[in-house]
Amino acid sequence: MLIPQGGAGVLPNSYLVAAIDEGIIDAGRFKIPAENVQPASLDLRLGEVAYRMRCSFLPGNEDVAVRIKELAIDRLDLRGEGVVLETNRPYLIPLKERLALPGGVRAKANPKSSTGRLDVFTRVITDHSYRFDEIAPGYHGELFLEVVPLSFAIRVREDLTLNQLRLSVGRSELSDAEILERHLATPLLYVDGAPLAAEAITISNGLFLSLDLHGDPEGHVGYRARENAPLLDLTRTEPLDPEPFWEPVRREAADRVVLTEKKFYLLMSEEAACIPPGLASEMTAYDPTSGELRTHYAGFFDPGFGFDSDGRFFGSKAALEVRAHDVPFMIEHGQKVCKLTFERMLEQPTILYGREPASNYQQQTQALGKHFLRRAG
Image 1 (cartoon, one colour):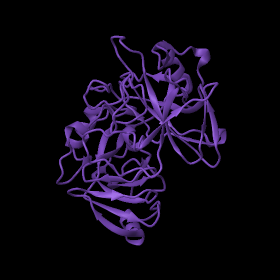
Image 2 (tube, rainbow, N blue to C red):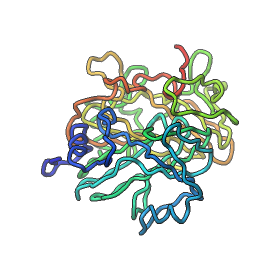
Image 3 (cartoon, rainbow, N blue to C red):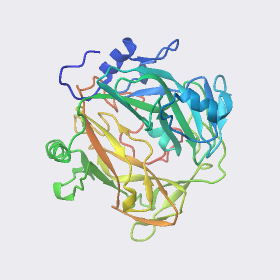
């Protein structure tokens, strides 16, 4: 995997394939499936065991294995039919992939979009680390995934992919000035099929997204997770009836919704995002000083999301995972709730999001994930 001298950016699929071939990303006796390589990320697979943990942790100066010995309550076998993970309990699962990063290459992990939409909290832990999801340049070692189901008990098994990994080199992040310049040249956000005007943009370490609380003609704007839902079996391949798991959310007058505290909501952005081939994006957490909200669990937007070179559509809306913290909280149409940061690609990928059958959310119009049947229309 030869990085051009002075090169900077997120590594595209061709470099990820080379990293696998050279053992920089390795799975030992397990072959890494070609379909797990995305335009700018790699889907990571659950290993053969899971540990029910007493609590979450960061390893600090220790190996993760040492903390497992101290804090694990039970060891579960993920082979065969898999196991049930209970709500509000942390589990730690060694992933099949491990890393041997060169000195100038760093990595970052994020939940897959389908994982975030299930209110399943995940983050990667590495040996001798003081941070979740961020993997230092030159790291050699295993990857461990902390999994905490929050709304639904879930069944998981070996080889399921709940999170993704990106590799990057050099200064890859775009400044606000660079983002605005890119938007004016090739729009990154659209509303109703038209580029968002420069004066309508809110930008501060990224482009802000707002809520769509107009909804459909019946006032339906999203979903709220039901209490006491049945087991959510992630090992199934056929989509499920959403009714036992989700209740519809409808707007009040004046296009607003009052969120019940601590409940999980799936809503949609007003803006449609367009990630061109030369950029990668990440949805970043809402500033907690700006309100009583937590938005987003899933983060990566690969090149090609919402992009169509033939102009048949203009952007794709983003699904927003929202939870009010400690009190009921009113949200309104157009309220800014999260933002997209952007990174340049080291090179354009040879595949784009939306061009493959596995691209589940291109031109999405509703927030339910791939595990559920979606409403017509």
